[in-house]
Length: 313
Ligand code: SF4
Image 1 (cartoon, helix red, strand yellow):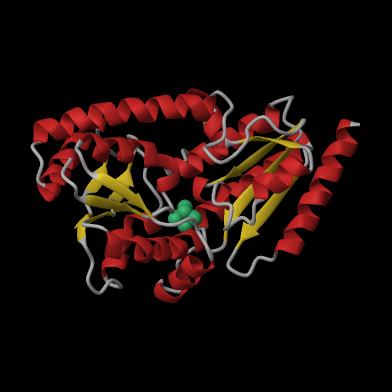
Image 2 (cartoon, rainbow, N blue to C red):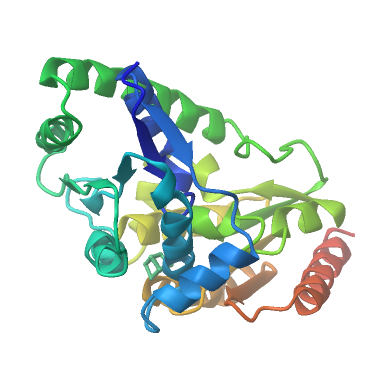
């Protein structure tokens, strides 16, 4: 154990890659400290600190960074440009380290390595080398830790694909299969979405997510679009959405978007049009923003589930 602490903000890509990076730093003898669950204080701090143009999840991420920054030796804030060949992350994610550096007064040592696998997956080793240099561990240990972490992440993704929700949710509730689509940081953040998964399960929904759809199926369905989608998460949402639209067991689709998100407004709109034109399956588009009210959400979820139940008969 080095005894040093690496801070991880519990927002944005935490909801995709926590298992990977937690295992990586654990294997190197670091302790990982995660910011608190999203709460009113974190949201308000984020809103006050972030630029007005940022989408809601980016604003909330600011709050998480400021929540954990003072308690750690290192802050894990990579610039993730691309995680898949020939694809990109959203531009707002690319700018995260620079935007945050500008608003922190005495930040801990930042691990702000660029991760860009746009041309070649093996470029991850350049990123590992840079991280090892920042945290001062031998490269050979870093590579060994990375291999262990990759295995853990792969196992976790298979666990989700087997129909499971992340920790903290019960995957076995509900009898009406509903696809709940959206970025992980919207779907799995129970404060931001006002407990949407639990509310839907109380209404009888069985939740299916984009993480349950294997990559090969996502790729096949995303190719239905005449133009290639080069945003990784946009492609996952589009491919899984088109798959669920054709899936006989899925009785309805809810798309959860963030206010201020360009990719969401495009992908959600495409899926909604597709649903109306070809499938006639109940489809609801919900937008989260910092002013979303719980009563309005409950009314819409109840109306949606009533429609699903009427159709099923
Ligand atoms: S994909 Fe949308 S919600 Fe996510 S960071 Fe980009 S703009 Fe924000």
